[in-house]
Amino acid sequence: MASKKYLFLAVTFCLLASYGFAQRVGASYDVKDSSLVPGKRMPQHTEFLNGTYNFPSKPRNQWEIGIKGGLFQVSGDVPAQFVSPGFGAHVRKAFGYIFSVRLEYLYGIGKGYAFREAENYAKNSAWGSNISDPNQRYSAPRAITINNGVRQIVSSKTGLPTTATEHIFYNYKTKVQDLSLEGVVTLNNIRFHKAKTGFNFYGFAGIGGSVYDTKVNALNGSSKYDFTSIDQAAYKNRKDFVKNMKNNVLDDSFETPAENQGDRRPKLFGDTFKPSGTVGAGVAFKLSNRLNLAIEDRWTFIKDDLLDGQRWQEHAWGDAVLTRDFDSYNYLSVGLNINLGAKSVEPLWWLNPLDYAYSEIRNPRLMRLPKPVLPDTDGDGVTDQFDREQTPAGCPVDSHGVSLDTDGDGVPDCKDKELITPTYCQPVDADGVGKCPIPCPDEKCFEGFIKKGANDCATLLGALPSVSFKAGSNKLSDDAKAVLATVASKLRNNPGCKVVVVGYCSSNKKEQQLSWDHVNAVINYMVDKEGISQDRFIFNYGQEGGDCNTVDLRAAAEGEEGPNRVEPPHPNLRKN
Image 1 (cartoon, one colour):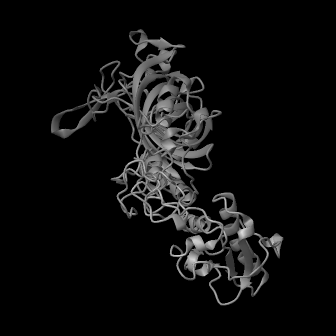
Image 2 (spheres, one colour):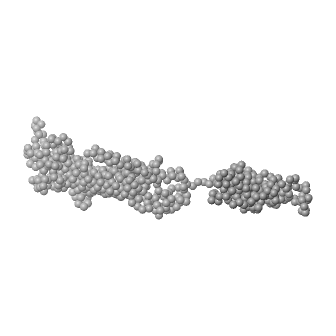
Image 3 (cartoon, one colour):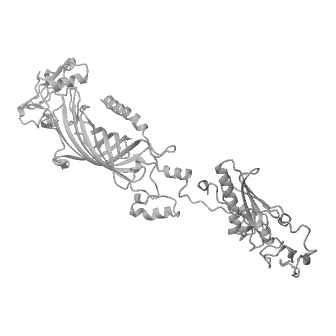
């Protein structure tokens, strides 16, 4: 019988395994979702979100309720029939990712039939005193051995030798109900290489109470059965023998109360009550986030030897004695479990507690990271790795950490008492103050001060730098702005000079528009940020022979003219 039970378990497992292992499983819940956190754990949740506590609070998780059906079997002195029904239901709640508690109810009907004849049944009241008609009671013979090894049958009533022998075959039918509180330990939801799994192994143990009512089939109507018609030797196996006895000898009445503990044991609803202990194991296959299918096998032990109505051990041709072991029962079941609860995550035994930790390692969302500390020895706001000069405290600098010198007189702005000194008033003293010549009505006054060719803007302004843009962009970088600040300083010192702003590339509309955007960005910056009049620029774009991402600046030749503002050629292609 045990082999059939495990065959049933193996077949069911195989049918579900392919589905369970192939389940698509997703990531766990969002730990930032405050709606999943019960009120009593909100302080911890708040501290966690604020970065003052390392662990997220445990979320509100669903309850599980389940119904199950399967095979119920009593393990006792009388061999049990394998195909006996059992039904159950439970409710389960997680206390953590590993441990949960469930309350389970079981109703089982167990049957059993002996396939060996019993002779020492006199002490079993179900086959004697419980039969109302004394003439119908089974009388157990007793055998003794006499001279020359000849056995003689002696009646237990008269003590006289007799040739009549009464043999019976034990049977029983018991109805068992139990209610147990069980602790359940999940064995495989902590996983290191995937977020979740589609199946769940667990073991459980608990305590509870069982009530049972056992009866035997001792009478055929009002008469006792005649078991002498059964030729046990004619059957090769137990299955055929029991089948014949059930079909041809016994009815299905089970009318006679089996031997019980009487008034010495507690009763509940008129049936015998006993404390019980339960152990078992199971595997659940996930069908969805709400449903799963479970296969379980549980054993229940009670300190009672009368679940099968028999506690007397057979001693051939001798007295019956009490057995020294107690009965137990087994329940092999298949059940459907449903998760219930709004604003809750799945029951925690389906979640992997490592999922959050791994997700933070891979893609940090709430992880606290220290601010990078980059050295800046002179405190000018430019880190040492980019700083070209150790600037005195309080001096404004450009993007390279070099002190600003607006008028180019060699004295930094932070020490220059004359911020803009005209070129003809230079050189200057240590405070940046120049020595300007006495005003005169014509240029003769400047003879000896102005170099030859000084009125030529190309000479006055010198070689002007180029401005570079990132590919496809018209935004000025910090370096480009520093370059334009130098050009603006030279234009302030030479108010009579103009600058030609040249952009390149014009092979298609996109290049033409981008070239216009580059030139326009340079002129607008010089006008809006440096305060140079727009009239001092000549707008020149779409030229050939240069880099598409570069704008060149040059001093305008004497008499050179051009527009300082040009409408965009393709405004719909303008790119920010």
